[in-house]
Image (cartoon, rainbow, N blue to C red; front, side, top):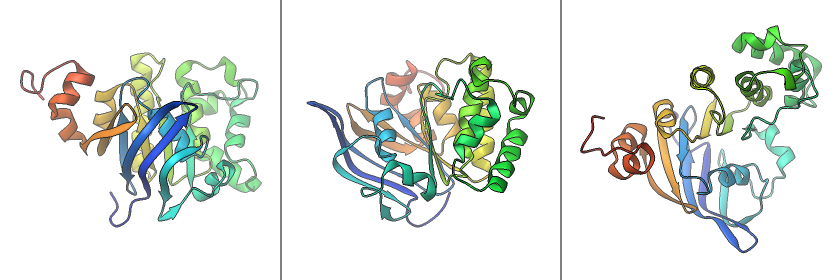
Length: 246
């Protein structure tokens, strides 16, 4: 983990969808080199928070700072250049494009040499993608599509990777494979903010975590602290900290 100011800082973030207040007060920090998990039930505002960081939804209040500068004046298309990339929920690869073409889209506008080097890096990280480099993304398995979505996000060499439910819809063995790759990506220096339905898996991978309830960050701490937290265990693991082993 890095020292000093956070790489990403959200302060009193609020987002409305019409009359519905999806996010009311989200405050969190992500430091360089960390994996930070954002936990919460369905509808708590987790995905909306990631969309807010990417300027995909309009803020009703609060501030977003990246590396010390506010993002409020930045349009979405400028964020990749700053070093922010999003791997969206349900993968959302380009099904009619090949694996290689999907990867090229992740570095759209970059020089050809940059793109070629990035593709080679992604094939080294995800060897299965090299095998299917000319295959349409629609023909990949769910796990392969998720790895392609992650690789596409990494093609811009982001400083901060936002991940929205990377295990969603995957078989357990594929979830393990995907998270092993994410750990490798983090070891290689990429900072991550992770939204994940599997709270235990998210805490095992992350350094710190925040709990989001009804659009408000209510609990925070190291991942080990949250694993032992009575409220978190009851709400997300279905077990009591006092009645079961940590």
